[in-house]
Length: 78
Image (tube, rainbow, N blue to C red; front, side, top):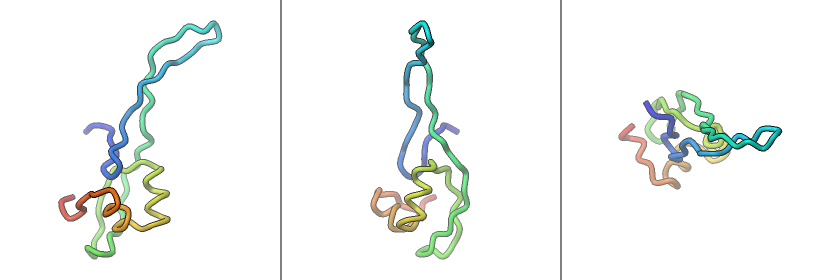
């Protein structure tokens, strides 16, 4: 399974690791994904999702149903 947030679609970012001598090498910055069982109030059930920590903070603030609707994600298909 690829490392992509199921709600926001965040994925890895290509960056450069710069040493003290300024030698640049390619580096992959992965998303901080967490596998969580979240309560979906509108569907009256738990949903198991792989979400980024940024998405988890927003879910705590707004709620899962509201945030998914904002992003255009259909939770009934998950």
